[in-house]
Image 1 (cartoon, helix red, strand yellow):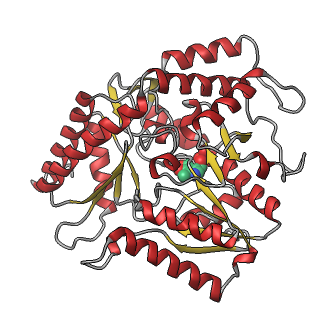
Image 2 (cartoon, rainbow, N blue to C red):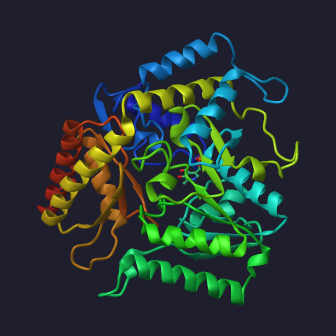
Length: 437
Ligand SMILES: Cc1ncc(COP(=O)(O)O)c(C=O)c1O
């Protein structure tokens, strides 16, 4: 008989250790809405959304129905050998929900592939060799995407990243000197950093694109001021550099609009999309204007599985559900509600250093209350204890010091209350020196 212990044993025998050691390795037998169904017979409130994927909830009935119907007709569609309506419809729908100008799409299978596509397209379209990325950003695990990722050095160990990549610091509102306007200071810092880069290391004529997450994700959930992104757009335009947004995590409603580009009112030239797009089926998209995509000559880039017909139907159903259930507005409402509750918790618990959020993309920084230093070790204990009480949070930050709270956009007030009550309880247990912690 399968037990949680036998699951873990089998996992450790045959799954690569690199993939078999993430938090919390919860043995499950199913998933539904905002919950995982544990092998232990318990229901777990999921504030991870399968790492920002199940934005409409796990196994939304309309998505499941669309997948079943699609499987009755197609399982595989190598685009190019054949063409089918779901891929065409999805491209039309994406053109409708994305900011104006992003109307042409390359379909892949994952976030990292969407980023690879974005970088390749930028280099191909401009004929320039170099890329600028931001310290702390995460863009994926294949070599090109990894070369622009610096959220943690362990991801890059023993690898020689591709050449021609330059790093500059991400916006850090916390570093703003007292008395100065945070947004203006961040924008000026950006300008100074890029000018320094252009003068000392690489001239703008050699730079194909600047790539970033419009909200820092894996690196610690940092929300940049809008002015910072506006300034970046201006600098790119001034120098003829393409701007790439990696919206793999911020996309599909997570920040309260379809994409962070709309939340901040800044449109990139190229966008990478994945995660929430197909509610769990593998699908990645590189988006750009027709004009730019035309420069990517036929055959310069392709893939066997990209734009799989079932994944395309799942994506179409996901878009319908987000609209029918008004989930963008709901994300903003529930995000504001959770934020209010967390600001209260922060006043109560000295271990909460900072709360940062946009929509339902929420980061809760855990610090050592005596030193004020980030405390990833304690955070992991908190996550395990919350899981014991039936609530799953995830983590992020360079030192694993930020609790990632990314519930499905369908989350209710009661579920937010339930999850945060558990967090409150665990933090209180820590303060009281509970033996398990
Ligand atoms: C912002 C961002 N880009 C890219 C990726 C890579 O996506 P995937 O794991 O689907 O390759 C991730 C995954 O966490 C991500 O958060």
